[in-house]
Length: 136
Image (cartoon, rainbow, N blue to C red; front, side, top):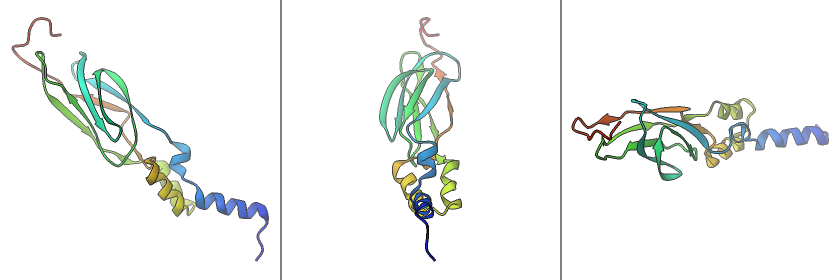
């Protein structure tokens, strides 16, 4: 059976695609909110490394199979607490199986785009009972 140039191109595109890489590539933006609505200093540990910031905020992390851990830094107002957001498989990743793209699956896994995280993380905060009046 002889394939036309267009059908050959189609076969190559299907075999080499990475559905999740095409549809949902790049870092994941996650909304970080605190359980009491106040601002707290947090450390966000992910495949991107550790980022220190003040929540509520939006953090951008590199996607991977590993979790994102958000830790409230202990200070005069708050006790240290943390929350872990596990990664899950990106729905677009399953497009590789539908189209038979085994190579595309490895592309998605290799780039980290096979994974995603929740859009929002609620950070539990635990205010110290004897905290000074300056603490909100």
